[in-house]
Every structure is written in C-alpha cells, then in structure tokens.
Amino acid sequence: MATSPVAGGNGSTSDDNIREIIRASASHDARALQRCIDQYSFPDCKVVDVQDPTTGFSPLHAAISACATQVNGDSTPSSHNEESGTRFLKFLLENGAIWNQLDKNDETPGCIAYRLSLHELYQIMVDAGVRAEMVLNRLEGYERLHDDEDGEDIDGPEDSQRQDISEANTSQEHVTSSVYLSSALSLGDNSLLDEQQNGVMMAWESEIMLQSANALLSEPGLKILNIGFGMGIIDTHIQNHANKPASHHIVEAHPDVLSSMERNGWMDKLNVVVHRGKWQHILPQLIAENETFDAIYFDTFAEPYSAFRDFFSEQVIGLLNQNGRWSFFNGMGADRQISYDVYQKVVEFDLFESDFDVEWETLELPNLTREWEGVRRKYWNIDRYRLPICKFMD
Image (cartoon, rainbow, N blue to C red; front, side):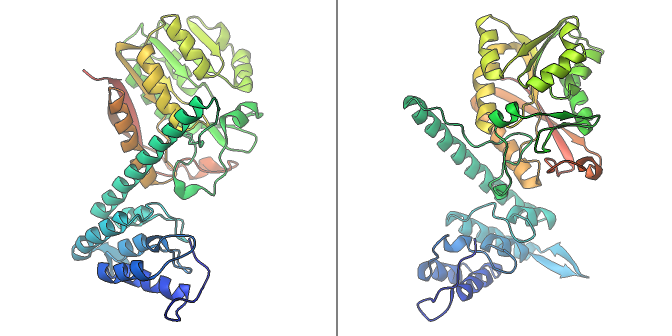
C-alpha cells in the first residue's frame, strides 16, 4: 500500500516517513512507532499499514523478519527477539494493522513467521486472521439480511473452497457460481477445467476422496448424499467401497457434468439417484420429503464461504441422521499455509455455533508441482490435507 511522496511537516517526504516507520518496526520500538502514528498520515492507509517501496514490507513484515538471526547465511529464530516481537505485534494489531498484506515476495507477515519457524508469532498472526475473517463474515451476514429485507438479491464475494479466500489475493480473478454454471467445461483424464482453465477438480485428489469415503462409510447399507459430482472421484469410491451403501444420492448442477454422467451410465446405476440442479433448490425439497442420510459429502465450486455456512447451519441439520457423519472438501485458503490455518479455525467456530463437533485427520500429500501444467492457477500450495469428520454434538 505504497504512498506517493509528499512533503511532511518537517520537510521530509512520504518515503522518508515510511523508512522511519519500518526501522522502528524492525527495532520493535513501540515508542518510536507511536510518535510516527501521532505525527504522520497517509492518503490511502494507516501508519501501521504503510509498505516499503523496495521490499513491500509492512510494519508487521519488518517486525517479524527482525526476530530471526543470521547464522552461516541462514535465518534462525531468536528467542529474545521473538519475545519482544510478540509484544510489538500485539501493539501493531491493536492499532489496526492488516494481517495479510503481501510484500514483493508474495508473502504475508504470517508466511514469513511460518517460514522462519517463529511459532509464537505465527500463532499471533493466525489468531489475527481468524478475528478479521470472523468479523467480515458476520458483517456480510448482516448485509445479506438487510438486502433480503429490502427485497434485493445480491451475491456475496466468491470464496470457493477451490479458490483463494484470503484478502491477500484480491488480484486473482474469481469465478462466480453463475458464470461457472454457464461455462463450457473440458474433462480430461487428470482434470476438469472451466472455460478460463481454472481447476474445478483434479485427479490428484483421489486419495483425499478415498479417505473421505472411508471416514463416512463406517458400515455397509448406509444412505449417503454427495453434493457436487465433478469428475465423480468420490462417487466412484463410494460405489466401489467395501461398505457399499444401500442408497447413493448425488446433487449436480452443471449441464456438462450431467451430460457426462449420462454418457457414463450414472443415471442407470442401481440404488443411485441423481438430482439435477443447485443444492440450494434440491436440499430443501429433500427435507420437505423427509429424506434423511447417514452420511453427507459437500464439494462445490465457485461458491462463497457464506453459502457453505448456510449449507451446514440450515440444510445438514434437516438431512443428517442423529448418529450420522458428514464431511467436505477442505480446500479453503489452501493457496498458503496461514490462510488454511485461519479458515480451519473459522470453520470450527461456525460448526460449533451450529452444534457440530469436528475431528481432523491429517493426510500427507505428494509433490503436486507437475499437476498444474495447463491449469490457470494453483488452488493448492501446502503439504498436508486436513480431512474433516463432522457429527452432531452429544
């Protein structure tokens, strides 16, 4: 958030003031920074959010980077520096510092803390992200309520589980649900892509889907519902599972996917019921018909987090048997570790509010570097997948 150079009250320029702010932050000098807060102002950001024009460092970046010492050319954590850094980060955040600004290396302050193994500072940044995202989500909810009262239908920001959720990535073009459903898809052996070459689903997810099916199908003869067919990876695992279900329902909205399902015989499979349309329309109908399920899986594309929250707070409650389990593709924020960690906590809070317990199983992922050839953007950039298993609280 660089500012254009302007003269300060003492003849200094904006760049001079920024350098002074960054130096105070790197020194963890709260008094010096407070003087800057009192004396300086910038036209497009707060003092605690200025960015060095060369590195892109904000005060948070500078404060965290200063907590590592150089040993043989490598950065290692310094316990003394980390202790003072902890106090200084809290000072910055109390003054409204943005938790996820990007520097010139495409790193947030939390990314630097994670890379340097500054665990306490990293956790402070995760907690700051959780607070910020929870507030934004609640504000969005109030706006949607107000819009509903005014009779308006306004879509919220698109925060798909297969898209970046972090505000640190606002430069990315997001695909809306309506655009996705009207776009032509290309289905290959290893990927399902939309018209813009965004990855809708990819074959590398197969092990994730297999373990998800294992977690849901604890015994044979269950009734299972999957929302979002895509490439049919989890549905194929469900059909081939040792604990074969008695009934297998699938909700799919995209016409190209539905056509592919028809060509591949899914509509004719024994005990498979395919519901054509958006889950927002189908699930209330199933609830009205008193349909219930022992297991539910959710994996949609190009929908906001608020839609996912509505799914489990309003629909799962009416569809899941009391002793049932449900899960979802946990890809929110998977473009960077801190975003993934932030949204795990956000989801935990929101699930708790809806009376769900969640347990997480960690899966190690292979190197995915070659998987992104021909794909517009990586939607996964971390080493481990956290598989959620949700059920009603006792």
